[in-house]
Length: 307
Length: 281
Image (cartoon, rainbow over all chains, first blue to last red; front, side):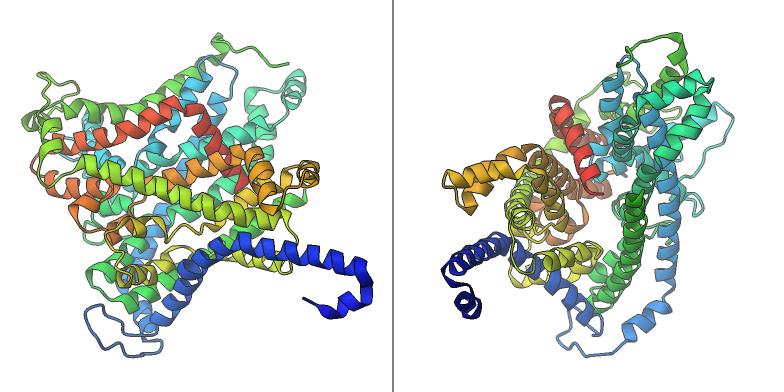
C-alpha cells in the first residue's frame, strides 16, 4: 500500500485508498486464470516459436545447434514455399470474391418481404454447420471425373468430362467452389444484419422519386453496406488464408504441389519431415504475413467509425 | 409500418433465385444421402444414379461396424472436447472481461491494448511450441490437449467486454447497496444480464472447435481419441478407393447430430452467430 498518499489525505483518503486497492486486488483475481493460460499457451509459445526458428531443431535428433538466420535463408530459396504462397493467395482471392457475391445476393433475396424468408435463411446457412471433413468427402465425389454428378450435369450441355481435382489449373478453383458452398452462410448472416440496419424510408423516398430496383440497390444498398462489405471481405481474407482442411482431405496437396496451401506446407514440414526449427520459421513468416493483413483490417475498419 | 410478406408476382425473380440457390445448397447433401444407400457398383456407374434402384443399408452398416472406424467414439470425443473447450473459454474469458469492463485498476488499458494487439498474431505460430509442450506434459492423445491450449481466447474477452460495458451501472450500484461484493456483482448482476452474449460466444466457439481439424489431428493418434473431422479424413483415405458409399454415409451420419441440433435451435444459433459476427467488429 502507498503510505505517502495516506498521510497526505488523512482518514478519508485512507478509506478510499483501501477501497481502491481492494478493487485492484479483485480485478487481478478476476484476470488471473485467463492470464495464466494466456501466458503459457500464447505468450510463451510465440516467444518459443521465434527462438526455435533460429535452431536446427529436428524432433528425432538430440543435437539442436543454433544456426542463425539459416532457416529464413532456406525459406527464401524454397520453391515449395513460394508455390504454396501463390496457391494460397489465388485460393483466398477467388474464395473471398465468390463468397461475398453469393452471400450478398442471398442476403438481399432473403430480406425481401416474401413468404418463406426464415425457411430460406435456415436452409442456406446449413452447409456452414458441416465439418470440413464431411464437406470434403461429399465434394470430392461430386467433382469426380468419371462418375461425378457435376460432370454428369455438364454432359447435358455437351461438355466433356473435366478433371476438376486432377488438373493443376483447375484444382484451386475447384477447392474454392467447395469452400464458397461451405462458407457463404456466415457472411450472409452479417449482410442480413447490415441490410436490416438500412432505414426503410430511404427506399420509399427513392421509389417515390421513380427509382427502379436496380437504382435502389446501386445507390442506396451498396453505399450504405460498404462498411459491412469491408468487414466481410477482410475477415474472409484472414480466415481463408489459413485454408488447410480442403486440400488435406480432397487432394492431399496434389496434383504434384498444385494445391499446397501455406498451412498444409507447414504441416508437411513439421509433422511429416519433423523439422520443427524450419517449421517454426515457416510459421513465423505466415504469422507476419497475416499480422500485416490484420493490421490493414484494423486500419480499414476503424476508419469507418469516423463517419 | 412493416410491409406485409407476400408471394406477389413482383417477387418472382427473388423466388427463382432463392430456389436455384437452395438447390445448389441442398443438392450435394441429398446426393450424398441418396448414394449412402447404394452399392459400390451402383455408385461407380455412368450415367450416375440419383436415386438408388435397390436401396441397401450395406454401406451404413459397414461404416458403423468396421474395426478401424469408430464413428460413435469420434462423435462422443468431438462433443466432449467441444463442450469442455466451450466451458473453459467461458470460465476464463467472462471474469477477465468483467475486470476490463467494470473494474478500475492500474494497467487496465495497457493490458487490454496488449491483448488486442495479440489478436493479430495468428494461432499457427503457436502450433509447434504448444505441440511440443503437450508432448512434454504427456498430454498427447488426451482431452487436456484438445481443451486447454486454445482456451485463453482473446476474441472472447473482447466480445464479452463489449457487452458487459453496456450493462447500466445503476443495477450494479443497487447490488452494492444490498451488500454485494465484486463476485456478487459479477455473478448476480452482469452474468444474468449478458446471457445472450454468453450464449452467442458459446455457440461460436463450440462450432469452431467441433469443426477444427488441424490441432486435433496432430495431438491425437489412437483410434479411440480421434475427433469426428479427423476420423472422417481417415475414413476417406482408407476407404474412398474401395467402397465409396461407405465414405459418403460416414459424412452423412456424422453430420446428422449437428443438423438436428441446428433445426431445433435454429433461431438461437443464427442469432448467436450474427451477434458474434457483429460484436467482433
